[in-house]
Length: 331
Image 1 (spheres, rainbow, N blue to C red):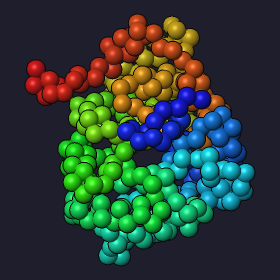
Image 2: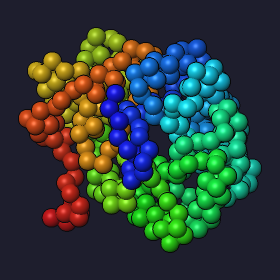
Image 3: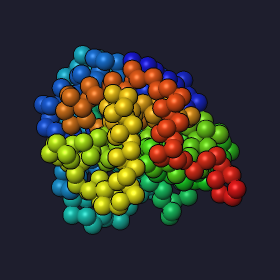
Image 4: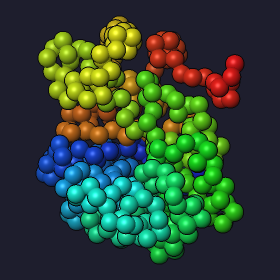
C-alpha cells in the first residue's frame, strides 16, 4: 500500500479511500465487515462515510455498521483514519425540524455526537461539511469546530462539494482565528468530469488541502460499461447516470474510444480510471465504494499500474480537461 500525507497535515493516509455508501443499502453487515477487514489487511487505512448513508428511513445505518465493526476490537479503530460528513436532513420523513440540518453550531454539535454514538468511537479523525451552507457564516462554523477539537471529538475538518472561492473564504477566516481550517476537499472528479481542475483543485493546492475525488468512475461509465452492455452483465452500471449519459451519441463515442484504447493495452477500464486520478496533482486518493470483495480487489490493482506518458496523452485526447486557470476562463 502507498501512503501520502493528507494535505498540509502530518496525517498519513492510504492512496485509496474506502467509501462505505453501499454498506447497508447494497451490502449487508456481514459482507460489509468482511470488506473492511480485507481493506485493512491490505493496508488501506482511510475510510469515508456520512451520517446520511443508509438513506431514507435507514439514515445512519452505514455508520452503525462501521461501529459494530470497530466494536470487534483487534485495533480496528486505532488503525483506521475515520472520515464522516454532516449537513443533510437526518429525519426519516424528509421534513427536518428547525436546526436539524445544515451547518449551524447547534446542528454541528448534535450531528457529531450522534455520529460518535453510531460509530462507537470517542473521536472522528476527519469531520467534513457535505455541502455549503449559504445561511451560516464561517465565523459560527469555525467556532463550533474549534470547540469540538478542544473536546477531542474531532481532529481535522474538511469540505465536500465546495467551490474554490468558498475554500478560500473558509481558510482565510480560519487563519485569522488561528485555526487550522480545512485540510481536505471531497469533490466529484474523474476523466469525464474535470471541471474541478479550473478552480477547486488549484484552490485546494494553494491552501494545502488534500483532494479526495468521489465518483472516480463517474457512476460506472469508466468501468467498462459498453463491454458489460454487450456481455449482458452491466447490472447497476446500466441505470441512472450511466444510462442517461449513454443516450448521448457524443458521450457514447468517447466511452467507446476509451474502452478500445484500453483493450489495445490489455488494461481494465475501471482500474485505469482510478490509476489516472492517482497521477493528478493535488489528489490524495480517490474514493472507491466496493459492494463486494471482487470490486475491492480490482480497485487495489489500480495502485500497481504505471500509466505511460503516451497512454496519459491518449486519455487527454479522448477526455480533454479545461486547461490551467485562469487561462481556462479566457484564452
